[in-house]
Length: 295
Image (tube, helix red, strand yellow):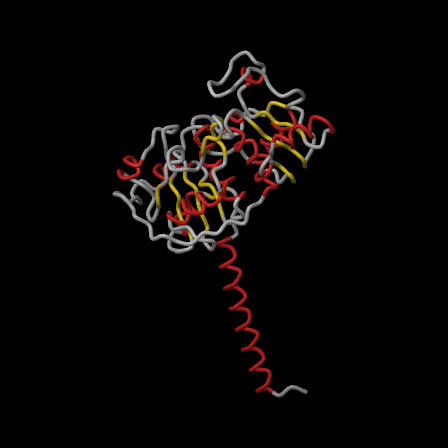
């Protein structure tokens, strides 16, 4: 039978293990990268040096390096989504994924390492602006970095809720080492689309406005009007609250997906004109609704 002294020691051991376990759980909670995080969550976690706030404001939202210098979220680093190498042109086709090595250099130069939890911050003014964030988010996923989130509502939400919690000036981050683990499962090729048409292996989802989907208008970067035969039209602007970068809740998104006729929960390929709007639809299907095998 255990002695009184042994029971005391056992209780102390259990208490120590409990405290240790709670510490681990709290640590995991910080880095349990939800697709969307709130202003409150980010404010609470700025003290953690593993959280890297990545401000990507650009021409789409009226932002730039200069506007970042005027005001930004404390500890944030800046990279212009349109100008700094997040996309590239290949054989005259814009919006292509850059070489992995180039992205490793870009990301490491921002002070982001493989142990960082990246929070991407768009301007917060429109669905297309959210597309800047979802494209960068998707890029991290392609590179095998799952510790990435988007600030729901973007910088506009931050400045509205915490107008005094800002910093000014430029930031020169300390270079980190970032090594990619390329995940082809997130990237659709022309062959994937051809196969989808031939054997219905994937549902095609056109994220563009209805007029472009119907061929009534054509984006300047598109080679032809119209859409791919059999594609469903999940318009990216319907997924985000108007004139903001607040993503609609999962119930609303699921209803929108159902209304356009998409019934599958796995095997979807999203597209647009340049791979920008497509990531908004991808984010809705893959990250908000949890569909499998979305490219």
